[in-house]
Amino acid sequence: MHNLNIAINDINKYVSQFTWLDFEVNKYGSGELMMAASTDFSYYHQLEVYFSKVRFYSGAFEWGTNPKEEILFIMDDKKILEENKIYDECAAVKILTDDNTSVIIGCSSIHFNTDTVFYYKRENLKNGERLADWVLKENR
Image 1: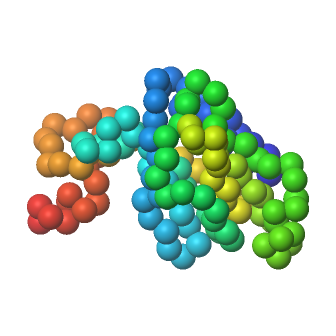
Image 2: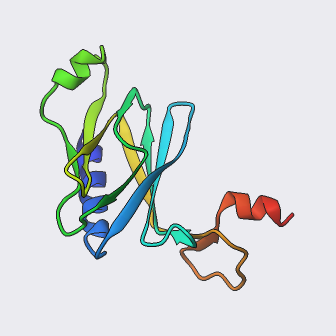
C-alpha cells in the first residue's frame, strides 16, 4: 500500500502542472489497465498510468479533470472491495472527474510514465518523447 500512496502522490503532483487534462482508458489486458492523459488527444498524450492486477473497474472510459485539485485517492471505505468479493491485496483507487463523477479501480499496484507519446510520424525525438506503438507499426 505504501508504494501505491507514493505513486498516487507523484501522479497528483505531475498532473497539477496542467490547466486541464483529459483521460481515457487506452488499453486493458492480462489484468493490466493503462490510462492515457493529454491536453490534446489529436496529436499526443503526456501521461500513462498503469494499474496492475486490476480486479474491477467502474466509471467512464473518457473524462476530463481539474488538475488544480488532487484527482487520485485510495478509498478508505473497504465496502466496495467486499461488494466485489475482493479479499486479497487490493486497493480501491478513486479518480475524480470534472463532471462530479468518479472512476474507481480495484488494483494491487500503480506505475506511470510521463513521456510525450506522439500519434504521428515525427523525427528527431528528444529524451522523454516517443511514437505511439500503432504509428511505429504503420511505418514499417
